[in-house]
Length: 305
Ligand SMILES: Nc1nc2c(ncn2[C@@H]2O[C@H](COP(=O)(O)OP(=O)(O)OP(=O)(O)O)[C@@H](O)[C@H]2O)c(=O)[nH]1
Ligand SMILES: [Mg+2]
Image 1 (tube, rainbow, N blue to C red):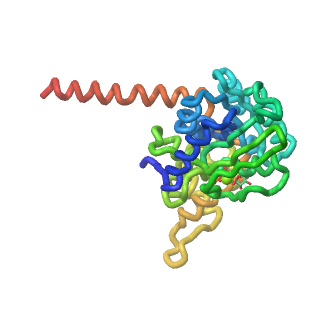
Image 2 (image 1 turned 120 degrees about the vertical axis):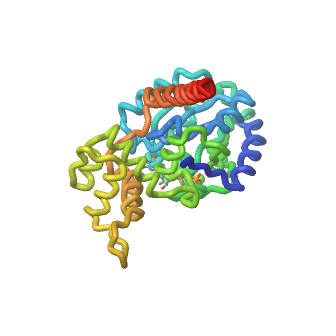
Image 3 (image 1 turned 90 degrees about the vertical axis):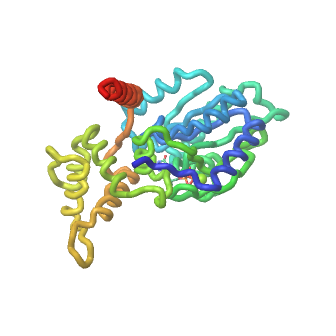
């Protein structure tokens, strides 16, 4: 199953972002440090490159991500033209306070009272844009919540006499090209719950954790995951946590799925990253290879007929 989520208000958000892009100097693109490429919205890149705006990529929620992997992602992004990448926790004021300085370096011509530096915060839903906005302003100017699409409209505020900042609604894009990206985004709560089947997302996450951090699930829930796949691990969580449906007393997999997803979102499974630059490259290479094989098989069948 592939996950897609592009609700109506995001079409208008995209249109508004395209208009505003003309009037900003630097885009602060907020990414989820646990899945930096899967949480990169290709629509934002397109809008930004259309106006040739430089970009500060902020790998946010780095307090939840594997620090070694985050370092690899910073090197990966910092090699890109017109891009500076930093890793922060939006909940730490001291880390957020460094962002305007980085932006200024990306648009050095904007450093005076006549030409204030104009920054626009963009990114997928629930990645921490409004949290960063509040930390920059040192007061609660934007609503924050652990669910996607909390912010629905743009908000422009003066940071000081020489800097303005715009918070924008989280944006998804019309077609998520890689199924695994959809699952990573859903696990990280960037996708509305109406667009996902929680069990499937939990199976995906459990498989990913077993593959990348084999000890994480066993340590959290207190059982051995040896020889388990994602489905078995979620079932084991249901048993261990006594998740039973009220009448039938069958295992309540949905409840166990939510336990796993919530624990991941809250960082209770340890600092984990769902993708690395290498795993990303391998995934893309495999996707290129698969259609070719299908094509060859098809040709062979035709030849045999
Ligand atoms: N652990 C951790 N949680 C964070 C961090 N930044 C934000 N959060 C949490 O992530 C959730 C979403 O934060 P928001 O600031 O509302 O995200 P947003 O990008 O504005 O979301 P939308 O407006 O829905 O697009 C909230 O529960 C925040 O407390 C961070 O660096 N680390
Ligand atoms: Mg917001």
